[in-house]
Structures are given as structure tokens and as C-alpha cells.
Image 1 (cartoon, rainbow, N blue to C red):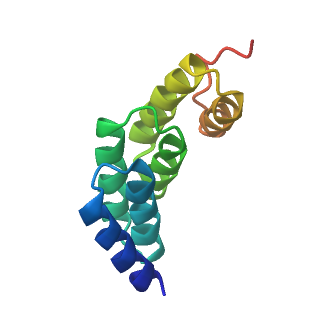
Image 2: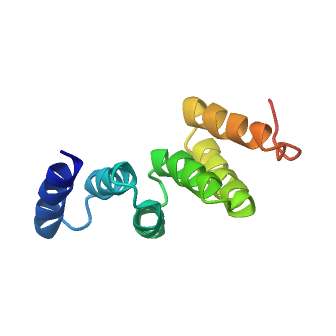
Length: 112
């Protein structure tokens, strides 16, 4: 089923290659198919092109954690935290702050 969804998403990306939601959806499908490496690469490309796509930071961080890349995950969470603060997105700010706290990397987080 996921491979069918991925095929459909890829077809839609051919028409609209800069659609951030479709790129994110493709990454989720790669993850569902067990291809974490491609999921990570897809989200990194998405964030390089569209750094304001906030949901991608949390997902990328979690994928990096699963891949044993804790320091890179922390860097990703912090980058997303900066963007969420600039956009006054309290929900995402809270999620990323919690992810950092769970990794013991919350020493630079302001709780104000």
C-alpha cells in the first residue's frame, strides 16, 4: 500500500517538484517502507529549499535519532526551534524543546 502511495506522490512531484507537502509526504512513505536513509535525504533537501516548513524539523530529528545520529538530531531540533520562535509557532516550539529535553540537550532553551 505504501509503495502505491509513494508512486502517486512521485507522479504529483513530477508536476509540482517544489511542493513541500508532497516532498514531506514522500519522506514519510520512504520511512514507512523501511528506507530511512532516503527519508532523511528527502527531508534535508526539503529544508534546504524551504527552511520554514516546520514539521520537517521534528521528523528529521526523530529519523536521525533512530539512525544513531544524536548530535545531528540535536542540531536539527535547535535549527527548527529557532525557526519556530521567529514564526511564533508555540506548538512546534514546545515539541522541539521537549525533543531536546529528552536528549538532555535543553541547556540553551529559554522557557519564557
